[in-house]
Length: 163
Image (cartoon, rainbow, N blue to C red):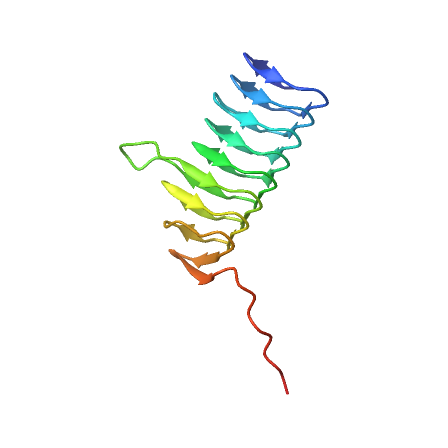
């Protein structure tokens, strides 16, 4: 209800609530809204959830990825089963050029993270809350801070004994 859909392809069992879908593709079982905007070139694969006040432009969002609220995903290729925290954005424009962000499968993007393109985040990597990520993050690594720095390399650290 209360949605506008124009020049778009909508799959089976999708739910669109009070949102605008224009020149976009939603595969099966996609949930959008409320108050979201799927702009031209947005392609949401099956099972994607873009929640309250989300915006997607010229991006492919992989199967099962979730972005619950207040996010902007522009000029990005996002893998499957990625979690994008509240307020996270892709900073795709540098003043001259639109740049792409690549986020591989299984990544966790912390709330309020800024992903400054061009950028590549490897599979199963993580960004901390409020991080400003300006450099590529290797698969399995964690990056935090402003600007973000790598704090783990994806390897399990031995437990320290506590007396």
